[in-house]
Length: 467
Image (tube, rainbow, N blue to C red; front, side):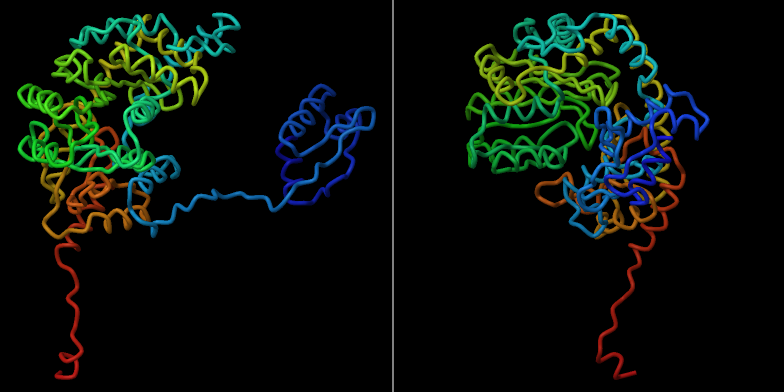
């Protein structure tokens, strides 16, 4: 009934102001109960398609302007391929499309059943769990659990040094609000997570990139950049680097902290992919014990992008100011999501879920690495853990152009220059091993790479006249 009537109203077959049959008449004509008729009318009122006039009945609402059925955001394949192109297309394309270039697990690998059980448990916790703003630092039982998890990574943080956020992205934004002023210099890896570039642009930062090697940033280049630009901070992934999959070696981590002390800059360590690790690696926050490092985590990549919950940990002085920033910009916390995450952590289902995810990724990585090599690409680093592989095409290959063509074929690729502030990764692609199982991806790439290796030669006008 709702679909039928809303279709007529949106098509203007029922004009604005027209009175609809009474509840009794509508039920009798359509052979439904009066309670069903009431429910149908109430839903249409809630959707803004009908208005209810006491003691007068139901009337078709006046719709202002044309009915917009398509997204107002330009998703054209012809717009510039940059971090925003990547974000928009990752989030708004048809779910049926192939997405080897996106940055999260496919739906079948997410913990949907556990989340449903957890939501039921949270719903039984009382009104405060579903309606309260929560305390400024966030749900205390979750913070105490995170305290124990961080201790397993070598980070000695009290529950009072941990603040919950609505996502890892919000945690990064708050850290940048605290530490940066427009025009400040920030060092990032090259390549780096593309949204680092987007959020730094929002804050008006000057971005200086440092080449990344298989064991972490190129320390000679890093030291030179620090001496020349005197950065305010260094923003990086803590482990299983996005997009390359590398992990910083302990010796490099020590050198980074030494340079941070020498040149007096902070480090924001985004550890979003920590739970994809088979074995814990070195954390900058563990070596530094939160003196200069703000350590950030999230459950969006492991559990659900819809159940938004992140956290950050840092020194007490910074945390007090970060709490003020959070309250000023978002007032409270997503208490329901925090309670949901806590429920999944303490009932053991999250641990079992991640065991299964890591086992799946091991097999998916082997398969993806083989297919990447078979289609003509070269792996930059043989990452055996985590989501990402960074692959190189032959010199001169335009991977951005290949990504445009792929989008028209229903395949979302992640071209390298999206991740490179210096735009030096034009012949690279990032692959998500969990999203790269469909052979159509590599059939397309094999053909596209072969065509790019043999471009059509241009014909000079004098050559035509001579012939």
